Image (cartoon, rainbow, N blue to C red; front, side):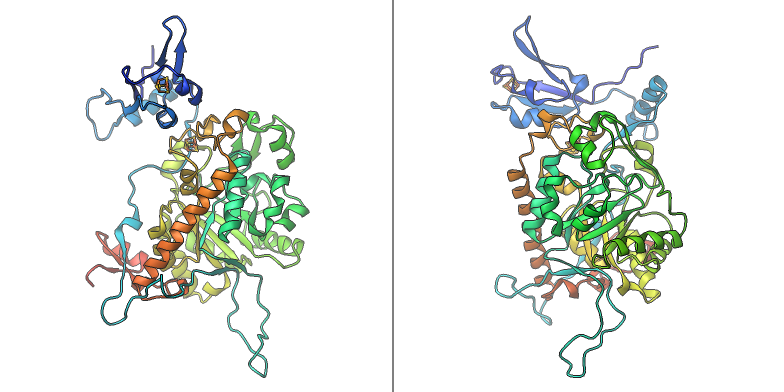
Length: 501
Ligand code: SF4
Ligand code: SF4
């Protein structure tokens, strides 16, 4: 029996415009465009097109249009084309279906059902062009109370280590190996320029990026790739990765072909071998075990750096977060189910985990109710798309947010979901030496820094419009939010009132 899966896209090449320059042939890393020498003509293999738009952007005569193929199945809401095709693929291969990026299903995006307040008449708004606006955020455990010396001039209380951010937006963990060195360098340089942080992910830190250590979060994941004393010393925060929103409960797998000599050196594994991250951290089976690792890392870094613990947002995140704080985490990171990844089983990505908005609200409420909210900063990720989402996350209780997909989009990503293939046409999720050159760190870092600058201007505008001159006044201020089109239960979990109330 032959499996027939219709092409996802149609490549329209306008013969009037096409000059047969073959730019599209060279740009497409999926072989969807080719030169037919016999006919002396550029043609398309539509079955290979993934809709990444690289050829459309680079065609000098705008001769190309990529269209969705109107699939010829009979309409069936339950048995959608994607469902049928996944079954066909598995009937053929007997394998799991892998994909990249985050959950793209139509679950409710709560950010789009929350609106922010603005000042009118009684508490005047503030003009951010004329008044100073404060976005500074400090990540780290805060004391229950502070004491001053007898002259009330100096702080007597010894503060836990704090890391200062000029904007509450951090670049999310993306490992070297999953993304190229040029992406890491772009992130590191942009974070340094913008006064924020980037995160190594679980693949270690390339030797040429140690100079950006003050703006780097170094991750310690289950595979312990690239973890050594110099690595821990290099970062300003050490993050223990327990889970990831795109694949809660699942480990990672970097195929051997992506483990180049540079990746192997950084990860401290042999070249060409598969890098397998176990699903659990094999030394953590309880909150007490977590506490041991937290304090081992504090010990190893002389109690000079905050220790962060990252989990995927799941059903009992609030109880887990409470345990994490009691285990000594200075920062807790919650990664919602829309978080991206280089590779994940599709069935996990689309069906496991919960939206970050609900996880954040429930964790913040729980820690407040237990009187321990001050002991750890909360950082959230998994679907933060713009500065409006950032402001809403802060109002729901976050101290800062991570952005991963948004940062990659700034670098050219078109969310084609082919990251797991290692053929990213935009040179992002690949270690192919020709493709990685498509990201120039000079340009990449500029674009990322621009994105953060744009968001910081917008955040100041949002704050000013609310009559606030500091982000601190918005943090956890759920009265500044209202819900639209939400049920009573949803409003209760989010801790916000209905619009109009
Ligand atoms: S890049 Fe554009 S002009 Fe050049 S061969 Fe392809 S379609 Fe034709
Ligand atoms: S990183 Fe590359 S392969 Fe992955 S979704 Fe973006 S454009 Fe596609």
